[in-house]
Picture 1: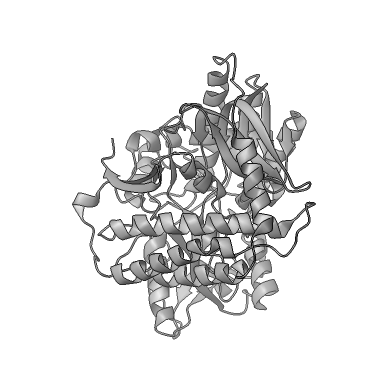
Picture 2: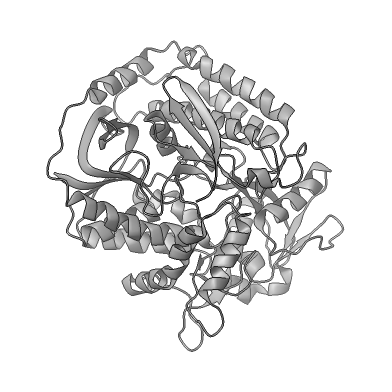
Length: 533
């Protein structure tokens, strides 16, 4: 019998799996992609931690995080993360993450935006990739079972108790069920719904968020999506904050600086986009670094700029633009990663764990997924030891077999790929860096029209074996749903706060110093705002 079933093999999922396994639990990891293809590899710049107390302290880290959240975080939760940060770094260092070092062999740190001190540990500008690969090696060493290329379809819920999941085996086309004492969702965020205007991978489609919502799990703060200030013009490939942390400059069309490059990301991104809306180019200037420094500290950024923009950053200005990068909202959890469904946990970017609020502090994403991956993995493991039996009675498998079978029968009168591109453009235009009531109302009308036409969309590939057309259609259905949920929450928040900036309500309103909550009740969707406890 599985003790802890983990959905997702990014940094959060693998960290949870390793810690649950070392706590003598039988663990199974299901993943839509291969672990090394996870979105976690896109986290380039670094991971925050106070590791040298003579220069910094945990209270500074707590206050920086809370300030960035625009008062929408829980200081108790932040405190737990920050207090565990040093142990997280030392644990990663111990298992082999190749952090950059100072001349006296200390773990090197750099400055990130919104922070009062230098506290971001890094591995050049490949930090997420190095952490993920190290965790994957550790999971293999522990013989943790990972079943890749399995698309989550539904949670199996019995009397408000989660007892497993159903998933599509992409390789065979077979719908399977997996029962477990506890289930942990680590499926990543939903910024990928902005598919043509995002730093996220194509596979980041909010599946876990939608599956949880459909099962009655409460979601929170869905309106808050962070737009990264610096991505490559035309391709939206991420240029890490490490470039600005090391001293990169933002220049306008006249090659003048126009903002402090290390202000919070929401402020920097809006300042850039205002100029782009005025048909002006904005540039990242790294020319003063010199080639040797670039190759040492940000080699990936140089490679990306050359490969995708044909620009040598040691000699030329790099045109940049903001793009959707990170989702602060998601599955509502408590400080232990518990959801409102018993034995169902969530951690990582899919979870709204009251850490990031309205605007995530750069360098805190990797910290959150490692610290809470460890914490929640152990809590789920310990909880599983108290569960002796599971009642394996559910009709979810038969329902999902029928669901997939019916998708093959759809008439395919409308091309869902073109609709996906349409959604991307609509979201960026009407639910992007600047928002208003009129635009969001139009967006919701368009999204609901697309949703109503899903029965008229289908797949051309009718094969069972490795049918990516089928997978992408299911992902599209999830994109539509999570886009609607995000727009509904954004429309209800009548203020500007952090990444949520409304032209019709341009100031912060104290009466909205609350988290949004959205849930499914029968066939209806309910939205309310809750005090932060």
